[in-house]
Amino acid sequence: MRVRHFDTPYLLFEKYMSNTLVEKYKQLNNSFNKELVFHLGIDAGFFAEYSYMLHAMLYCLEHRICFKLYSADANFSYSKGWTDYFKPFCEEVHEHFHHKYNRHPLTTSWKEIWKEPTLSLIKWKIKTSLLNFVGNLSALSIYKKFIRLNNHLNYIPKEHYRIPELGIDGDYLHAFQKMVEITWRFNHDTTLYCNKLIETLSLPKSYVACQIRGGDKITETSLLDPDWFASLIHLHSPLKDVFVLTDDYRIYQQLLSIDDQIRWYTFCQPIETGYVNKNFGRAFGEPKKEQMLRFLASIQVMNDSSLFLGSITTGPSLFVLKNKYPDGVAVDCTSEQFTEVCRQTISKRSKVSINNLTF
Image (cartoon, rainbow, N blue to C red; front, side, top):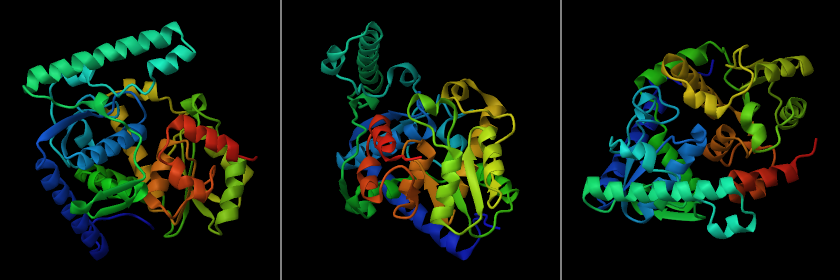
């Protein structure tokens, strides 16, 4: 049974190394005079928001800016924010103005809007610009000095990073994995919950993992066909035990019916018929907590798999593919494309995915 416990010699060593890196990050981060407060969990899916955060951290490290976090209202949180599920890695602030006025940067310029102007797009641009302006003034008033907010950032990462204090000198994926090592640390309660839940799967030591999305992902890109996914698993691995992260139990049932050679495992519940991010954001309390913990347990299972197959268009898959790189199989882009496309926006990744898919 493949379960990640935190008491084996290897994992104790891994934990020690990770903690050492975290302490180095804290020391370096706290040495900077300039400051940025990053608002996490505004309106996008968890891994989109998480990636924004890692890119912001890299930006701050390169520009010698102290990174601070505001997550009290995070759309994945049920109580406190980031520390509901993870260990802290930096100072958190709690000034309430961040909730409304610390927003993501405007990625659409006026020049782009005037090419195909619509009233709703113009209203959105004006509203967001005003919110950002008020946010900058509020930060200056409250902190009595210039504080950078989300709107000062560019989330598109660079090709190469060099931060010698943290042992970073390589391409984006190298830097990304270091940032994951600093931040992706479950707290005690999350660790216990995930280990207990993973044990119920009774997975063998070696297994394959994949993700097949449904729900609101259709609004961003084409959904992958379960039949095609099953054939890819046979193509890439002789293993017959496969964990699937899906948000629609009907996809799991379809997998069971189309391929009886594979033993399928999932945490998806029979009542689930597709994830919709807005609905999850409106949930609260224990239901949201349980759903998020099951999701995090699924990510742990995929991270620990012998082979992972996923799409470049879905947040969890892209995270695991980047974190396990150069291992893993991106099913909708070539290995040569991956190092470039993994840094791009969802719209650009979707175009690459559609061009590569052949059913």
